[in-house]
Image (cartoon, chains in turn green, orange):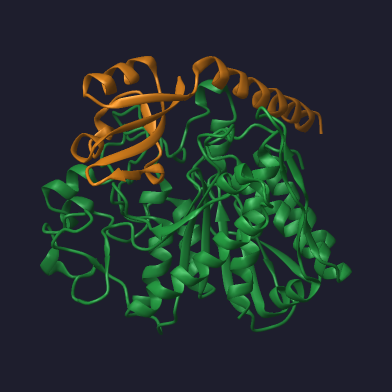
Length: 385
Length: 88
């Protein structure tokens, strides 16, 4: 499958993987079709019953072209390595665009670790959450920066689409949630014509959002990564406000804080995260970061281009309704028995160093793909325990 | 359209969403010092001018011509794949 993959190629690759590895890999069509009538598929890989449920997703933002492709190639290599009982090899790559070539050596994940993952994890991969948006983004250069889905305009409006990563049912109604300053800064909008971050007419209004939520809930996902581009960051909850570990009453469900949350580092409100949960996110995130860095070799330029930051999602702009925060929120769901959920947004690649921002050129894509594979294999090993 | 980095004090940087023609990537925000941040995004010429009018620093990472060339390469691949799919 050639990068960047078309929507049809992604669906075909999922079907091929399930057909090639029927004992290990099952393809499921998610319950909701998109606004343009497309079905959305995911695969489940498991070598034994009772594995720890993991979900990897990509393509929630239409213009971020690399994540779905990298998720599919990871699946392909993981399944092949398991069936052949070999190491999973991450190929060497030489970046030929700078003044002097930068060599990234090959790396490998031991066959025993591949077995551990496949036999101890129930791995669900939904590589393309938003096929309508990707098809539109890939329809012409003028549409390349399209981010949202393709929800049709409301009567009387000409504006299309919802940001699926603002549509999940967590702090969705940001105007109720924040004070005026937080409201001004939040990366969310109730304007359907907002090109980037329209939150939709209601929480989980979008079929694509409900597809992800149903997998998270029905499969009781304990480890989740949503792959995005770009920023070389491994982000963990929360995105709504800065984290604090001392006051559990400061949480997104507490109406006593409505209209008083500031959405800024160091303000009077901080979103509660238990210390052990924060520490586990740091630990697993550091393992992902280290996996990328260790494979970069010894060239200082390669090391500088392989340094991912591990940090909470909130930096300058608070966010609401994201998939990663929603996944983490389920462990605090009063309606379901609590289980710990580890959840990340992995922001791959960079605006600089010729990495192409949202749309890396084919010449640099293998570097981006390597980083996804290395980070996610470290993540899967952590999930395997 | 070009790919740029924007830098400036916290307050105007928190209001970048007001600038038309700017598609900035929220997660690219990096703190430079106590009251200065840097954010990356795609911007039209008008957006670049508006950012500078707000007193923000703008640095081009990928100029418009280079960005157009990157898109040309990517869409050439896509068009070939889409044509093949249409024949199947």
